[in-house]
Each structure stands twice: as C-alpha cells, then as structure tokens.
Image 1 (cartoon, rainbow, N blue to C red):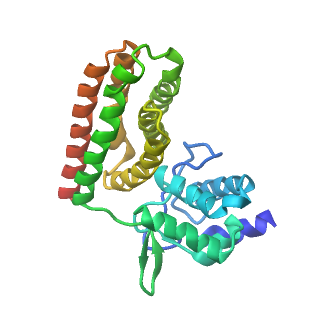
Image 2 (cartoon, rainbow, N blue to C red):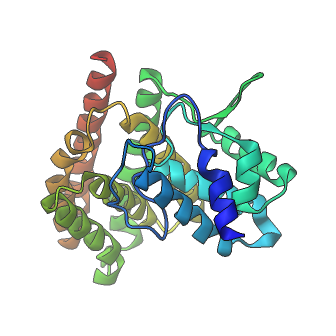
Amino acid sequence: MATLRLEIVQQSCKGVVRPNFCWAPGVRDDAEVSTGPDDEGRQAWLRGVAADVARLDRSSSAERAADILRRSITEGALPPGAQLSEIELTEVLEVSRNTLREAFRLLTHEGLLVYKLHRGVFVPELDERDVVDLYRLRRVLEVDAVRGLAERDPELPAGRLEPLHDDVEAAEAAAHAARWAAVGTANMRFHQHLIGLADSARLDAIAGRLLAELRLLFHVIATARDLHEPYIERNRELLVLLEARKYEEAAVDLHQYLLDSELGLLDAFRSR
C-alpha cells in the first residue's frame, strides 16, 4: 500500500514550477536535487510526507495536513508557482477530500496557497511589496524578542540558547561541505528559535507562517549560497552577544541584519 501511495503521489506537486526539494522532515536536508526523470529530491520529499502521515493525529487531521504542507514550503520543497493536486494528496496524506480542502483553506488564509479559478491550488508568487511587508513584521517580532530578554530573563540560562547554538554549528558544518540547502534550513531554524526566546505560543504560531512566506521570497536569489553565506557569520556574532547577555547590542545588530537582508532581496527582485 505504501508503495502504491508513493507512486500515486509522484505527480502531487505537478505544475508551473518543478519543486526544488531541499529538505523534508525525517529526510536528510542535504539531499541532492536531480533534474532527470528519477528526481532524488522529489522522492526524498515524498518519503518525508509519508513519515509525517504515520504520525498524523486523526483528531486534527486538517491542521496536521496543513502543517506538513506548511513545512514543505518553509524548507523550500514547494517553490512559488508549484501546483498541488487534490486527488493525489488525499492519497498520500490519507485524508478525505473535505479534510484536504480544509487544510488548503487554512493555508490560503495564511497566504501560503492561492486558489486560481478553473486551474486549482498553487503556491503563490510574491513581489517587492511582500518583501517590505514581511520584513517589517520580522523586525517587530525578532528584534522585540531579543530586546525583551533584558526584562523577561536578564539572567538567561545557557540552556535556552542551545537550539540557536546547534543551528549555528549546523549551518557552519553544512557550508564547509557546500551543502547550501542545509545552510538555508539551519538559518530558518535559527530565526524560529530566536523568536522562541519570547516564550509566546502566539508569536511562535505567527513565526511559523512568517518563515514559510519568507522562504517563498528567497527563491528569487539565484543560488542558495548567494542567499545564505553572508549571514552564517552574522548568526554566530548574534549568538555571541546573546551569550554575553548584551541584549540591547544584539537587538541593534539584528535590526541592521534584517535591513541588509531586505535590501538584498529587493535588489534581487529589481534585477530580474
């Protein structure tokens, strides 16, 4: 049955843009992306989806199905313009058509999917206005999370920074091995864990949606290396400031970091 589901869903992301499968939960995030008929990256994503399905909570299957698809967007597996097939995804996710449509509605509400009349459901293609809007929100969330540590947790235990430390080391190791997709994954996790320092379930939920939309913007950069390499060292520097409990200095540094990142994306959009 598992083999049949895998065969059925091989066209589940057919469409305008062929997905660039970089990482999926439960699968090595440095899987090579093939452009031939036996797309190894595509197979890796499908195996990751199948692994997630095995853990699906039937009491909230629409939310869990949406979460699987949201993570695929966040980790770069579903690029802008990719089409999602309702028929095949009901098979691989083992959910009803109504449940899948509810998952689609949830992600459409979040801005991660769009419905095109008589065509179907697609991953949206963002523009320069989205860059400005999303980075405004990033600065509000991330900079406040860092600056607020001075009041919430001035004696921040070292253990609270372990996830960020792991993310920085993962990015550095991946860069050394020229696994730039893996660098991107580590970078996304770093910023998610950064917002997590605010200890707010609501902010964590907002961050999950924000980072998924950001990943759609990142596809405009020609290569993952061009996008992520400049920020590997900057993540390390930010972590050092947090470890030293220099929260205000870290907040100022992060604010400039995000301005620079926004400018780089805007330049990429304008040079297309």
